[in-house]
Image 1 (cartoon, rainbow, N blue to C red):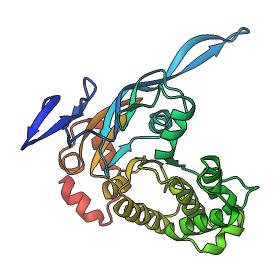
Image 2: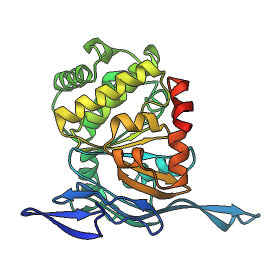
Image 3: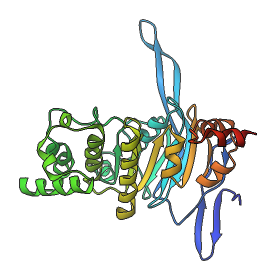
Image 4: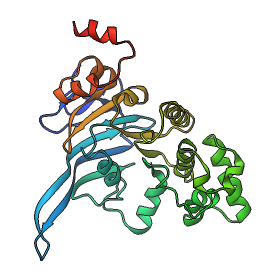
Length: 304
């Protein structure tokens, strides 16, 4: 059933249908109560400069009018080709890249207007797992200091012993041994480094995490382990994810809702099963056609 924008009754509760940019193919997804994260008409443009005086001659519209909601404990998959603006969306939401315009509200608070102590308080609840586990970890620091740094910055530990105990507990939750706290990032494999990155993201006990292609730099078997870990953490801690990927096969396994992004815009947005069974936009159909089929005969039969 397609719901119009606005408030839709469901029993005695109020549900909010997510508005989608004009021209996008969408099945309105109904969220019970208020969403945890609300993004509306988000734009992030980068200036193109030329000439001796480096005047602005054009704009790269990396994000061009993106809107979506994410509810508590929910995962939204943001999928699209490299360069379509997926990572810029995630970083703009966290204000790691300043957006040009739009609105981002987390738990009802305006993220883009927040500064100083308010922004620091919001950052405790909103974290990110980066795509490349090697470049996202400081090679000069031991794991104890990498994971412990946010705890120290936010004043959440009172002593060195408490810091070590918290870091070792986070490592165990991420599937790493306690002894890893005393080693350097170069001593670990790619999958182990990503587990360290996940432990760091969990350090401040956030409610929402941007997962910026957390498995794309890993081989297939390690990808499955990391996806299972993220799923277990969501179940145990009630986390919400924005899961960014260019791989529709990964998105299918992780997300209940999917937003398809192309050239800075969301072109299709809806429940996973609806999009997989009946994609509306030609680009969505292209992404689904690119998913490898283990049995080639099934592909030929399906095409026939």
